[in-house]
Length: 158
Image 1 (cartoon, rainbow, N blue to C red):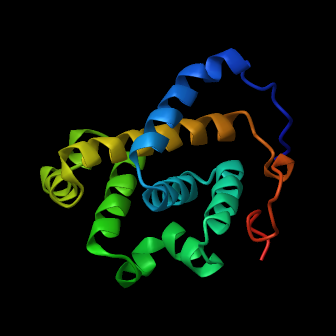
Image 2: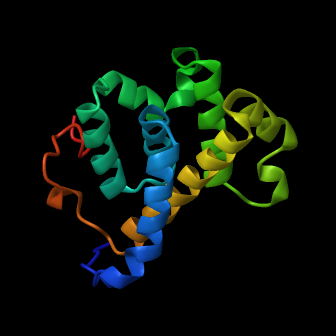
């Protein structure tokens, strides 16, 4: 099935999303942002966001192995701390949301216990933000090769 380039969203429409991004960057530790962004983008299969966040994680000192394990964390649960697993589980639940029971009380309580009440809410906003970006990237068919500094790994070409 052939796809065609779609017109970009007007930049003014990005202003509220950039506000969310600014909020999250100020409140969520970079390593947890990488976890959330990589996992949600992998679940949503947003090639543009995956390329961007792989690049950013590598620039942040993450190995290709750590990036790959994050994207597929359920295959490597022991590679993550309890706090990281809780953040990844919340990312999965919110990304795959399909009703109130998608995020069970037991998961939310564990995230609050490990990250604090404010930390849990900030993580939620990070997950909401990347899911919104994924939907824009996928729908408008953003081209990952347009990103500067991406490698074959970032583009999923191993």
